[in-house]
Image (cartoon, rainbow, N blue to C red):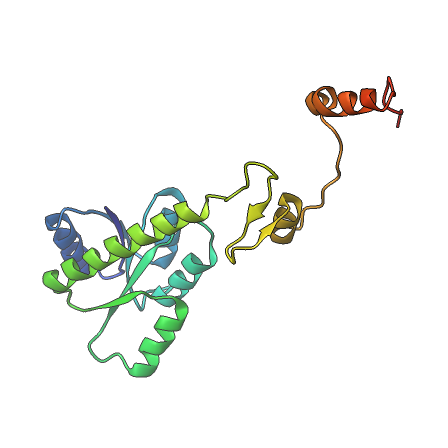
Length: 193
């Protein structure tokens, strides 16, 4: 799996790169948060390992930007010094950080956290796929929402997107349904609009 490393210390970055390669992952390197953000715009990355303090865009700001964008979930690990305070860790968690790795990185800890990341990313993909299915009645075309409530498709879509609908009759339905109903009533042509 591709793993983006955002680390401004070259030696720490290279050590992490070597550990990721040894674990069978494809590391991408960014020397700061701005470069990492740029890479995220062009590469399908699902895991980021970021230093906390970097010039320009730091690790927490990078995480906040990732959380604010739409798209696939990105698992975010923050590199911390052993002296990180509870207040700092809370701030990082509130920013959207998923996990923490101490510096220097222990390859065993990295392996365990990446396994957790893979599981969570698998679950998020599965949930997203399940949410993309829209239960619709084959007869009346009502849609079931996540509270098991059935409603008309227009109301369902309108509530979620703000879309308004106008109604009409397509040419196929005009021939299949409307003209036969009008013929039964003795009307040859539908009234003009």
